[in-house]
Length: 424
Image (cartoon, rainbow, N blue to C red):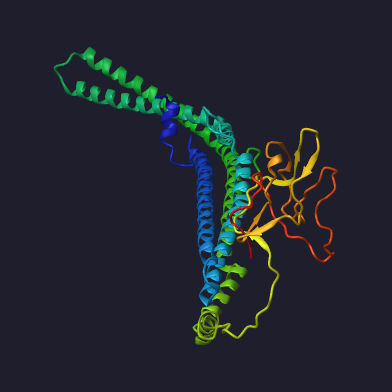
């Protein structure tokens, strides 16, 4: 490990070499703290979103149930209770939207402007703070390292001088040693003294020079009037962050307080308190209304004498006509000489045994071919059976007045009426 690293690791004061690192760490911790607040707000938004969805599902489910109940006092109050839940749902949805728009987006914009992270290095702002502190300490660091080097040399010379002194005293006190060895120990001691004096002078000189830089160094590190203003710049950034965080938390608290101070919700609760106040008259009204609808007080149509009222008889069919029924509109027989013979007219229809019958066909025409003109989509509301003779003249009776209409019946291909047709 280098001497500079040892100096920075042993730093305990702001003015020590590397002592600024606590300020850098504070800035990093401040950004992480703001990111933690952002994460907390996102989680609260998720809670508000899920809670709103649950309230909406709860309201939809029970609203359908209550709407299917019989109208009563309980149904009315039940609906009001459900209205409170949907109002609470709208309130929490509004809180989620306000948190997103007023808090979360503002924090995101602040981080975008004041924090530019890097994939492989520290953020841009952190590197700028470190570079500013290092520039402010550059001159001081260089002289400080010289002082440390001179101090080490001085301490080494002092240890050598002390060792030489002890060795010289031991040699002089021992008479058995050679005189030459005593002389060499004394010379070594004098050299160590000279080295100690010289190293002490160098040490004091470098220390004096370092003290001369102290004023300028302090101003670069702290003084506002200095050109560097490194520390004050950090202070201003931290003050800006503190004000911003407190402003965001204050706005968040105001948004949360809207839950307790929502005027519409409070008014709704006051109305619910009045409606849920125990009042026997409301219960009696509910019971009385039930008695009027389903009890002894309900309106009843008692049987009375009714005069006979004649009504027009009509021929109807109890069986429903199918869509694909074929209605016979005209029936003629053609002889070999192309002479068309009408089979029947409207007056020739017979009513026997309660059923509508067609007259018998003469034998001389039984072997002739039938030619049928039918309309599958003809309306059932035709005024009569349409039968034409060979000259195309309508065979229906014309003796009916305007107010009299002949009865309607359907004639199928077998020239007989339906078995279910009868006179009503």
